Image (cartoon, rainbow, N blue to C red; front, side, top):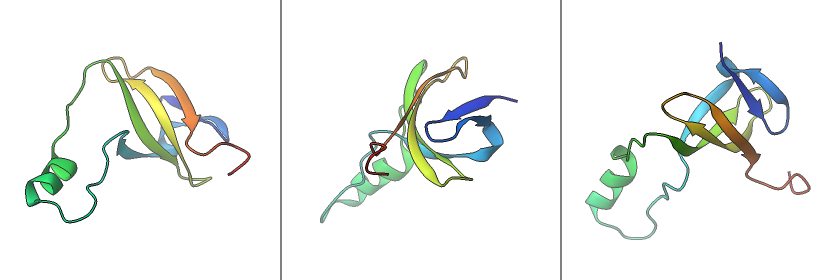
Length: 87
């Protein structure tokens, strides 16, 4: 079992986390073409190596950024999306 580090709770079992998607995949705004929605919903770069992703720690319900190596599954870093003083 792999351990992920929640920036708020510390190291926890991977089963406590939910993948939220690639970081930087911004939702189209306004009146956009259908192909823009298709790109947003279905197409990914499927990178090899370091990737920035959005994850949620289910027990504390906090969403955070995780940088993870997609080849080795090594967690490189985690960071809160909202500074602690605003959380």
